Length: 189
Image (cartoon, rainbow, N blue to C red; front, side):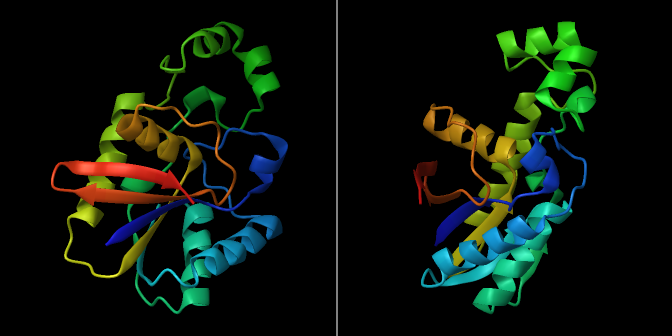
């Protein structure tokens, strides 16, 4: 089995630079078009199952891909949700700096700093790794697409490879390999 891991399509908040986190923001028309393009990129990859975060932007991306590829089984898993960003959610970077100057400065100095109400990084990694391990160790055949979120995917990639990727474009796609010892490689598609 090959596991493909994709970020959801664009939302209006992505476009204007607002932190989304666990706030449930739907796809924009651009995001829907990106989801259709993602489906085309996966057209010849034999995707037979799709898993997704239960947040609407990821779920709708997964639904669009499933329909385009004729995949009839879509499973939602809340462990694939975006990291909760607490007091930063709904704000732009400028608004974070203006409204939460001290917290913002601490966060910029060390991204492991947790803003008030935010989910700790270790917790994000634990739940995403658990969700992806469950998929990888299942008895599924063919290839599986997992649709999640930028910070959640970046946390996973960093944990597995030791390299923190740059912020991900909407519908960024990775191929993930899993072996006896766990996840063995991640390549950008």
